[in-house]
Length: 613
Image 1: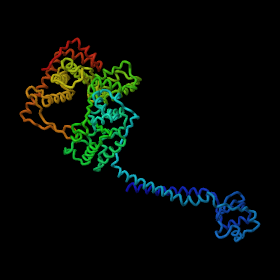
Image 2 (image 1 turned 90 degrees about the horizontal axis):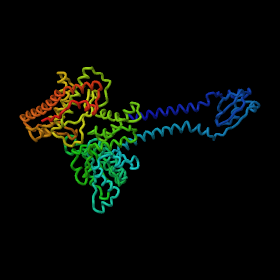
Image 3 (image 1 turned 60 degrees about the horizontal axis):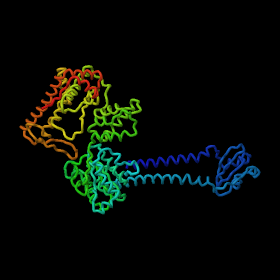
């Protein structure tokens, strides 16, 4: 209603403007013309003041003897000469004036008639046509909810192949069969083989699920339809199912083709969960996907690919054979894969000859492909900010810390006392890490504030780990208490700087007891059932499945593990007090110590590896 009122207002305003414009246009030519009555014209003719008279219908255009222009009108029923004689014009005087009759069928005559009458009507028709067109568009939109907003990536445009995806060797091998089927479907059909209807790409965020799907499309050279699962769901029940039908209809017409549904867990969550899973629209959309995948003809060359980082919440009907029965896992890249990913992302960027991408890969455990792409971009930004034309090794190393901890906060002003406390705290972490056998080696120590951290000690493992031992966990706990122990040893007091270390150490110690079964007293058992809400997709509560007495024993075991680790850290700090002071003083001077500088500094103190038991 509001839109209609606004359109009517615009129509009225437009009509007024058109009327004013044409009124001004028609009156513009007559602004300097004198209007005469018949009597006044007769007097001027008799006085010899009229040079010529032009007759155009009933209009008279008069030119006076002095060159001035005038206008008048004659009687409708009679001619001009007859009219003038009736008003007493002398014949001799009339002969002195030139009389001409103009043709009334000229362009100006018709424009003079049509413009004031027809044009406003045409303008009104156009305005109302535009109003009704807008209304029709709104109606069409109301009836087009069931149409899919599909994105088509043509293989010839921005083509991606398996060469553009670093690492993931096993995942590529799994998907090569899909590519072969799309290229040569007869080879499989003739032998009676059935290619999987659906391929589910599973992995943490940023591991390249969408990129891998596009690589399959690029390798097979077929149309690639991409849509997010959340686009199926609307506020009107049934719209999602209609869009699913439309999607599969378009894909079948373009076969062989690939449908890629990103974040399929948005509609594919377990039905009947009760919490966030009872939405009729979401369930109807899921049901339609299941039906469409079952309805594929044997000869239909359409493969459905989907991506999710939460396969545990997907409906079991979606994962059964005949639907998403091939599951491809895309894991976090190892050190070799990270180096290959970095080599892809540095293409087109000028690098210093001394850049060692392997060192960057070593310092980025746990980074996904997206994280590494962001890292390379950040390194280029750092180089440009410093006015450099090439990206150096220091730019990459600085970007690693920026991605992990945040940007440097050199403008943060701290007192000399706080700087000293921070230096001893980080020196404590580094010293304990260097003195314990199963701890990760130190790569860098800094007392420059980054993000929320006043300083940091960068520790990274020598190799990729899939499993972790109890001794390694205990070493991590001791390193976490290194800063705490150094503050007690040096200043005989404590600060809030260790609060985060203590919180993480307490959480880790509790997990050793309750989740990993690493308590000698309580044995191989887990304690507490974690309940998840599928709708939220994260832990929200833990159910106690043990008695109060067992809870007391759990607390005692957690305290025992923490106390062992803290005592080990305190012993190392007390034994190598001179090394601690040397590290802290060097940090206060340089603010940053790289790995080689740190180990050269402590080499003379003959640190012996300690094992926590």
